[in-house]
Amino acid sequence: MKKKLLTILVGGILILGMATGCTEQKENEKLKNEVEEKSKGNCEAEECIKLIEPEMKVEEINEIIGFDGEKKDETDAYVWQLTEKSKIEVEYKDDLGTITATMDKDKIKSENLKLSICYDIQNSIKNGTTFTYEEMVEKFEGIEGYLATKAPTFKRYIWVKDNQTFGATFSDSLDGKCSIVSLQ
Image (tube, rainbow, N blue to C red):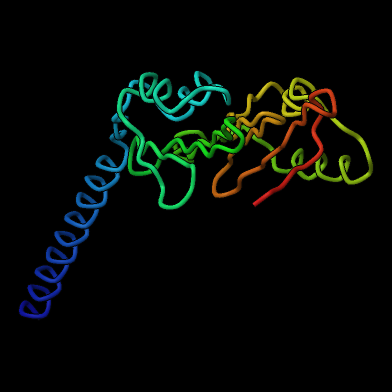
């Protein structure tokens, strides 16, 4: 009986030790992932895109970001890799750039965003209702979107919740009203 009790006690201690070690390891990994990677540039992607305009030349953008962009093969496009998960890309056509920011979605997500509002907006647009950016922010109960694309004729904003991204494109030709939305 004593032998059986000792075996159970030792087994329990081993299991407890392994569980504590695993928990500690998971906590260390979580802390490591929470340490935010600093941008290589003068600004984060969500800030850089606000400072760059479609009519700017590559040299001007290099100065704003703080390092030279890499030219993509066989296209008139440049990429500034700011962090592992974020970058700015500018593709030129007729001397005007379409600027796209790829952002770390874990960093820009909003727990307060209601996906039901995204679905309501999608249905409204399908039925012919349009919204300005300000009206959409009001629909989202004050939650601002992140500028993801800036082009000569439109702007695209995104809202992120968990692994879902709601995108809305606002067209200059429609007086800044939204004509295209997506939920991915």
